[in-house]
Length: 278
Image (cartoon, rainbow, N blue to C red; front, side, top):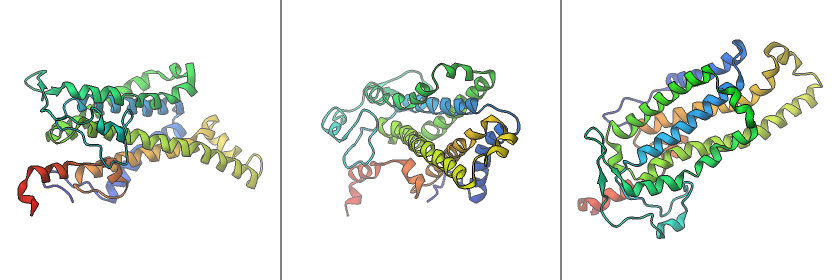
């Protein structure tokens, strides 16, 4: 259901636009000689900036966290944490950083610090690339990083601050939103590499040796990397579309519901409004 104060999420034309926009870098790799490594570097930096931005936003969240009956736990938490310091029985103590900002809460820092173990998963590709990662820190990647940072800051401002959503969120819920995206990318990566490798071997076995040589001749040596890049690009488009749907709809379904996360606010509202008890 679309909320009254938010514009409609869009239709198939919007979905087509999201997919097309995310596929433009593929055209750049094929037609304009863009380096695949630079493109992947920008994708990686975008994930890092997103996690960092959501971690900062979590410091402003006012609600206590609830972990009972959850199916997804962020890094650093499990169902046993419900009996630990995850639940606070006292009122939060706000800390004012400025008149133009909402207060932050000291207790939220503990949640954020525990969740930062997610960077171990994010850093995994660096172990594979090694010292070659420095070769992708080009001017193009730098300019793209500036745009990525600006886009993520704008997204966090729109999602959490413009409508004062931080008043109805726990720090766990804010961090969870980012970690669900990271988990999705990790799963896609784990599935893509073996699946594409097997598919390429199968094509060579069925069609014969040299079957992919015409493609390599047309595209260049990076042709072998494109089959791996396509699922990652489509995964990124899926994330953007799903998060857009989750933001614009009160009760999203499908994969957008997964990116929305598990929201216990309905139970809080029932407890706070005795008239709902029937």
